Amino acid sequence: MMGAVLLPLGGVVFGACLAGLAYADIRWGLLPDRLVALLAATAVIPWLGGQGSGMEALGGSGCGACLLWLLRWLSRGGLGWGDVKLAGAAGLWLGWQSMLVALGMAFLTGGLWACVLVWQGRQGWSDTLPFGPFLAGGFLFAYEVGAECWQWYWSLW
Image (cartoon, rainbow, N blue to C red; front, side):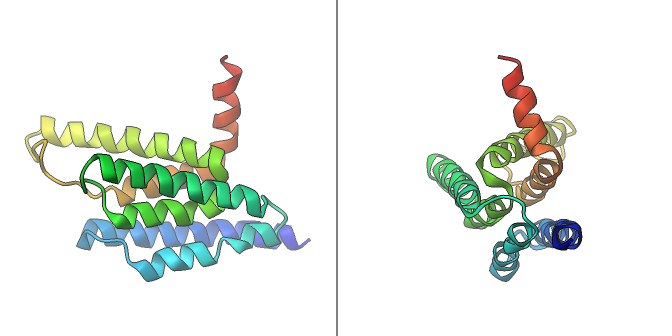
């Protein structure tokens, strides 16, 4: 019974936090720490509803934060710390498998959007582009269908 109430509520909270973060990144070019912390703190909602485990959550958080930290380091700061923290917080909701699906979707959509902007002459290759909205979209996508995408991908092998 509790899961029937908490899981939809969790989806609303997850989506609302991500929408706020995407808006902030587009508008001000930053991801507010308080909103990222709220996203992390509310990750207990799915657990209380009987979905996921603490180990899955820690795996997702570590996977997302470490991969984006590595990318930040390799790009010499081309990716912001807010993106790294956001991936860590969202990973608590997603687990490591859905986190990989989410990051794949975020990089695919962000890269395609960057190509469109360059092709239209609205931005150059060295211009910055907020990545938070693409992360948010990838996280929402993975929250809904990440497990199915993961299973489908591995069924191809």
